[in-house]
Image 1: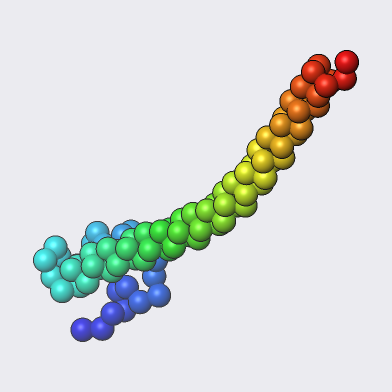
Image 2: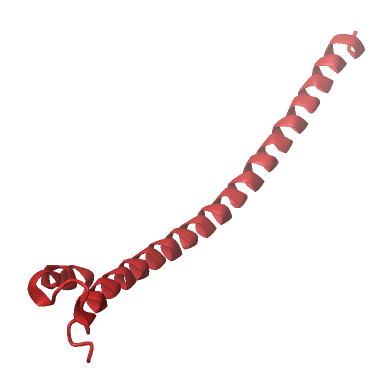
Length: 95
């Protein structure tokens, strides 16, 4: 028996043809049910792959942002130390 009931059809087409095509339990009916499951699994795989790519992109962007925040914090810390030193110098050393 060929696969003419499922070949080149998406899951919605197969599902719409499932009722009335063959008796439940027949080879054609089981072939249609399995084709729907396979098409759904393929859709899930595509979605997961897209999600994986988005997570990788997000991770790279987060790493870049983390480096920027680190250097900004470092610069602010240095500026604070310089400011504190200048204040101490003005208060205690310029009499």
